[in-house]
Image 1: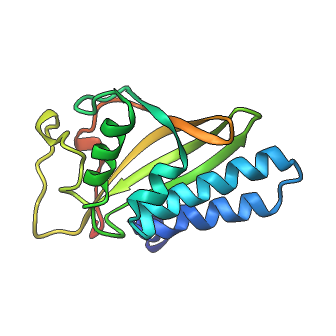
Image 2: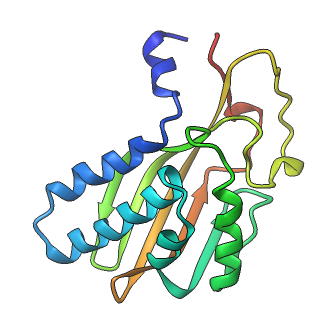
Length: 179
């Protein structure tokens, strides 16, 4: 693996927030800028500041989360289920999980992000029992999985998230950084 390829796999939780800020700075639509501001607050609270109150304030009272293309990640709806989910997510250390954005499309009712999720082995939202990953603990590794996330909006707030993965997590998603 080349040095440039390894650098692309460094998990930097703040990178997505910075990418969102760069996109928002170039927007001319007030509606799109407002949606991006909410998404920036959401990502910052989730990935950097670990602030459950700010995170929950970016969403409607009964958010809906859906996961397609992988196993072990249940769909859920409602304030309490969403809060419980995020309290678990906030246990993940900073720079153990991040999004690597390839493209971002902003419509009038949703923001769509395509790219990869990067995760340190061991932080896979309770889905490890559904994966057949054998990880060498003595080698630095990253799990890199292609996905598309839709962030729908209603009345200026996120209605939840819809995640589309390119299949279940598996051995092809494990990248050793010393190769």
